[in-house]
Image 1 (tube, rainbow, N blue to C red):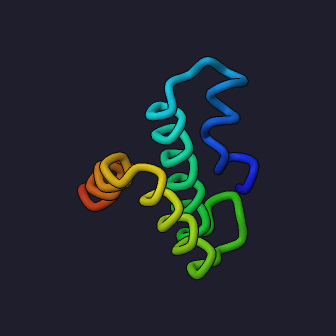
Image 2: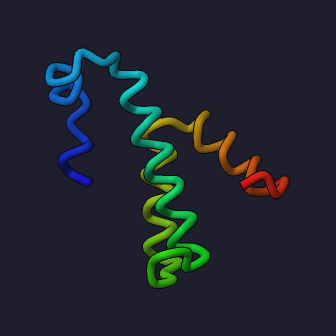
Amino acid sequence: LTLLENIEEIKDATDCLPIFISKGIAMGCFYYARCLHIGQGVKKDKDLAQTYYSKAFQFDGTVTQRLQDMVTHGVI
């Protein structure tokens, strides 16, 4: 994950706006956390899932909240 934490470096390499980089990383962290949480395609690990849920929130809390709402309502 440390490679993904340097938003400025990613911005320079991709010409993507930092806000969209953060949103994308947040989504990736959330989906990976969800897989860890339920054991979908990876070994179930709720502690590591919590770490990635937290990382997702650090990158973009709004995206994370929307994704969690979707989980709560059974959409994903």
